[in-house]
Image 1: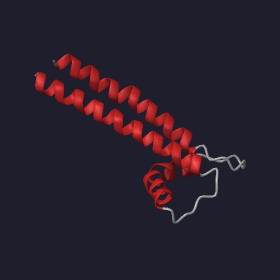
Image 2: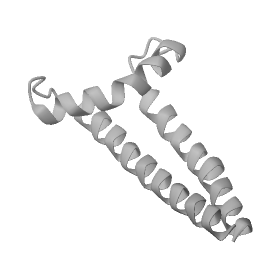
Image 3: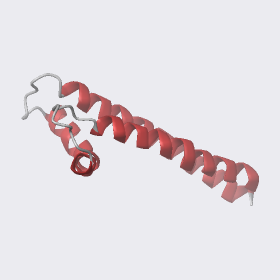
Image 4: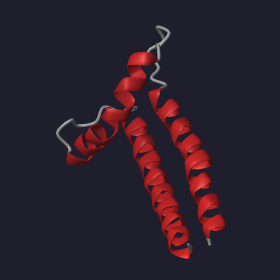
Amino acid sequence: MFIAGNFLGALATVLNVALWAYMWIIIARALISWVNPDPWNPIVQFLHRATEPVLAPIRRVLPTWRMGIDFSPLVAILAIYFVQGFVVSSLRDLAWRLR
């Protein structure tokens, strides 16, 4: 069973790194939104395409309270922390028990 344990440990590590990288992409998108970026810039287009599938559903559910402040990046980052704390930790614990 050590093979399954090693596989789950590696899967937990890859998932953790991917979530960490995506969190920084969301942070970069939020920081760029504070200025008036060139919409034709490839980096701005990448940030928009990479984060909009996650942020758009959150924006539809989360009201803006007529303040004009977008809290969807904060909610997405909190969700990433939850997934890292719950799913990644559970995978690591399961991998450790299978070894």
